[in-house]
Length: 326
Image (tube, rainbow, N blue to C red; front, top):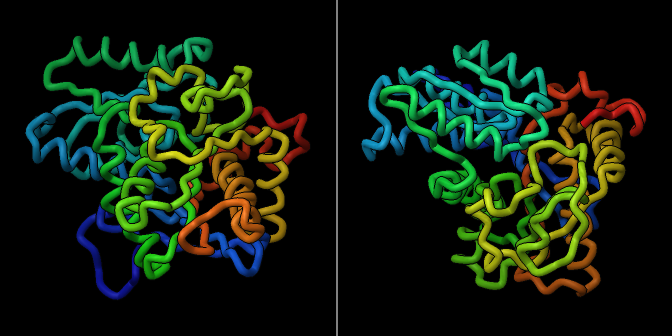
């Protein structure tokens, strides 16, 4: 986040150092803090992995100077990579399932990237397959593959987590985050567990997602409106480490929608559905810590608000639940 203390050479230098803000609805004696990732220049947490992954791949030689990055993405990762690619003189191509945010796709194109759509019914698996097909057709093209690239986890281990812990003087009892690729939660969890082995870690997913099956639970697969988190095919989400997770909590779309509206109305937080789902679960964890139902090293919960609601207004996020397209 820009401090205004001195001029910066590039927009890449404004990525990270986002605000950490308390939630009013949490219990007073177990505060919940949310990292506001819409303060990044591309307006989401994915700016972090866009910058980190491309810089590391260039340094390692897995990405050639002037080369092409091809990524299957629901949108925000594309924007984050496009912001970084433009500053690093790289070409960017994104493969996006049709049903995802039109606003995000417009922004990727505005940043100079090429967007290739795949059928919604093929899901992210179809987008991943198409991205690798395109990479084979082009010279000097690579697929960073956020769903299985350890640099995704490393980005949050090196940036997001230390920022949270520094702001809270290292006293974080529980970490809560939604899992799409799972990079954010895994990076935070690794960092937290290294400091305090009993840090309580919670993964968040929408009802209908299947992350819970990785903990041996029998959950019903279904469609969900919440964007950016969840999976219909856990096999494609190779970064998720069940050993680092104490619980996976599912949130009904209706509860997420209500929390989006509450956060705006009561807390001035214009956040999207994944942030609202994180908020619901983070508050639940805080109350359970307060009531001694969860044993955590500190009476503090930290979560992330990955992006803002502005990119989803066309989907009716602030309309009645039935009108929300998801």
